Structures are given as structure tokens and as C-alpha cells.
Amino acid sequence: MNLSLKNNRIILASRKNRILSMLIDYFLIVVLGITLYFALVNPISNKIKFVENNGATFYTSYIGLKKIEDDTKLECFNEDSYLKMMVKGTLGEGYYKSRNYEEIVPLNETNDIIFNYYYTYKVNNSSNYESSDYDFLTEINKYQMFEIKDNYYNLKEDEALKIGDYLFNKNESFIKKYNETKEIAKNIIIDARKDLKTNNHYKKLQSDLSESSKIGENIAFIKCVISYATSFIILEIVFYFIFHKRSIGAKAMKLKEISINKNKVYPIIINKISRFITFASSLFIILGVISQNSFLLILFLPLGNFYFYLFLFIILVLLTLLDFILLIVKKVNVSFDELVSKRVLVDQEFYYEWRSYTL
Image (cartoon, rainbow, N blue to C red; front, side, top):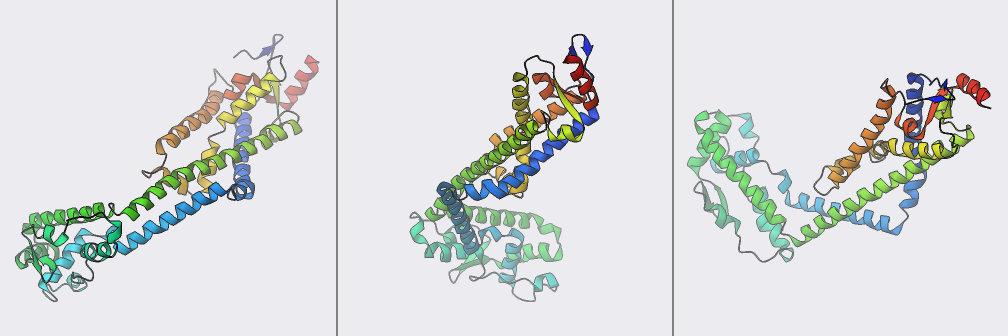
């Protein structure tokens, strides 16, 4: 880049001072953006009826789904605990002389998560299900290792002995039988969870949660864009002119701007547009702070706008890095903002010498 005016070389400020100036400006925008979010943007936007209604929908659907999870307890299911409880349900108390065995509660109609889902929860909420011929006891009776007695199922004694010998005596000769039974237990819980998803109330809540989550993400992002834009205008435009066409960071490092282009207005406009873009990665810092990571976690859920925000995040971070990398590279020696706008940072002393020469 030819930094000369009337054959007189312009001496740029040191890289260290220019980098520090940019870092000060960048993090001041972050801090003010966060402050504006909590002080103005969020309180005002939350009073908008659409935002308020969407928040209420999200909360209601989330609580509704949580209640279903608590009622069915299907998410609490553990295959190993299930098998141990089934073994004790068949063999009874004291069969294995171990503390592990003694602490286990035998599986029965009261504490069996799967059985209670099909014959208590589903029966009590039958109006939310489509008609189905599926009967859990009939299906489980197809497995040779189970037996049905008094409208309940459990392991046959010889099967319980083999699985129990592996679980409580570490008898590796029965590991195959244990793995086969554990696979059946996995299929049982998978089928139950799939069946729950046919519940019309559950499907409605899941749909409402998904939709309100996506809208909520977009609202949160728009709030942060407004906070960032307002912060940028205050710091990079208002204070820029208050400090005689230099940023707070430049003032702190005792730097001044010189325009290589003879046009006085155009380079400033280009510089500010460029800096608005290259500093926009601070949006995600603001997002991370104001949402306490909840927004970023939502992005990784299936119901999130993951790919859009991931792509945007990568692009903005790369642009910010480009701003600093170009400044570090000796052959370029200017930031991206300086490169496109032809406005560069120099030391105050040089600026006044240059000013006196050009006047």
C-alpha cells in the first residue's frame, strides 16, 4: 500500500499502539452493548406484545413437557438398574449376600416405569392418544425369558439366575445372556418413548416449544444487533467526532487519523462501515454474556437455527481476525478498515507535523 502524500512518506503509528487502540474500541463496544441491552433494549422489547406472548408460549410448553417427563419418568430409565430390580423381583430378598443386592428394590407394579407408563399414565390420558391395539404385556410375552403372572411380568427364574450371577458374582460366562437381556431392555424403553411421542398433547407442546424457541433465538439476536448498533453509533460516531475524528482507543493511545484520499467525507464513511462489519463478531460475545450460555446451548439442539448462526459466527470472527492479521503482516501493515478507507493511524506528534506541512 503506497502511503505517501506529495512524495512525503507517512509514518504509521507502531503496530502495538494500533492493535491496542483497536482492542480498546472493540471491548468498549462489547461492554456498552451489554449495558445497553440490560438497561434499555431488553426491558423495552419485553413489553412488546409479540415478544411477551412468545416468551409465555415457550415457558408454558417447556413446563408442560417437563411435567410429562416427571409423570412418565421414562427419561429416568436405566437398563442396568432395571435388570437388577427384575432379578431381585424374581429371586427375592437375601439370594445374593452382597450390599449391592440388598440395597436394590425388587421390580413390581408400583415402581416399574415401563409398566406404569402403559397401564397408568397412558390409561389416564387415553384421550390424548390415537386408538392402538398395542398391549405391552402381550408384546413382552413374546420374549422367552419373561413370564406373565397376575397381570404382571418378570424374568423366569433360570434367566434371573444367569443374569444375577453376572451382575452380582461377576460370572463372565453369562455375559452374553446379560447383553441380550440388556438389549431387550433398551428396545423396551425406546418403544415406550416412541409411543409417548404419539401423545397429541405431547406433540402439541413439542411443536410449540420448537417454534417459540426459534422465534426466541431470532428475537434475542435482533436485541443484540440493536444493542451492538447503538453501542457502535455512540462510541464510533458520536465520540469519534467529539474527539475530533478519532476513536476512544486512538485517543487513549495518543493516535490520530490521516486520510490519504483527498476526499474528506468519503473515507470516513467507508472506514465506519468497514469497522461496523469487522467488529460485528462482538455480537456473539454480547449474546453469550446476556444469555449466560443458554442461547448458545439452544443452537446445538435439533430445534435451533444452528447452521445459520454457526455460519454467521464463523464469517464474523474471520472478518475480525482479518482486521488484526492484515495489521500484523509486514507487507500490508494496515488493518482492513485502514486498507479500504485509506484512513490510517499515526502518532499525535507526526500528525501535527504533517498537519502543519499540508496547511
